Length: 169
Image (cartoon, rainbow, N blue to C red):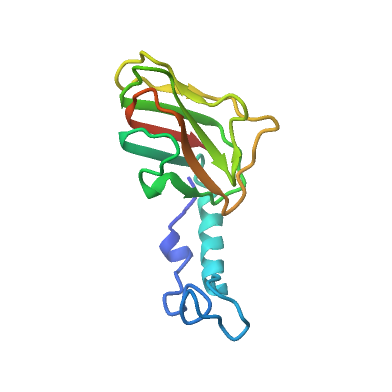
């Protein structure tokens, strides 16, 4: 495996403000408000280049309680992608499996479903911790852009709880 010692290869510019302007709402002398400063952009680009050599990445979405449609239960359901890669595998499981209907989830990249019409489904009647994997994605195969936004959405709950779903890319 390649050396990905990010702290030594990509030292963070702690002495430089993260955002332009004195505060998020105050513009700097160029009129920019709340934009990343160039030293931090270079830092994040360095991390991205170092991480590309690792192999597959995994974005995990966890809903610890009851699954609800259209409700962001925890903030980690939004994940920033750091590489130009396509999804390879998606999986779903639930500690409390669906009992009234299938549990259906979708993962979007910059607002577009990575699955197309066929979403990620945990069938009604599955047993506890059943894992369902899927390798079918939208056509053409989506490419996750650098700094793109992945978002997990529950389309149908089926009475499930303790849900975890992932996409590996």
